[in-house]
Image (tube, rainbow, N blue to C red):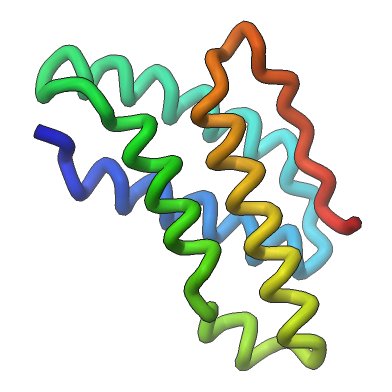
Length: 112
């Protein structure tokens, strides 16, 4: 059984990194580190609780990318642009998590 707490932990962390990136903070190294941690933690959770933890995080990130962030609405003047960048950031992380580690060439462009 997939643990909801596991999914929430990583989804919240990546959403926070998306907000930091939008604020102009360089988050590339943090994203890469957290992806590595998510992969190894998911392997452990899959062994103990059943398969599917990492894909579940990726699915949650896609869901989260479609939600309106109250933080963005409060703090940004260009809400539509900020939400589009947030969506792209979270969807890229989800794609990286779905890609096997050897094949993943993970780079996170913050602004596009």
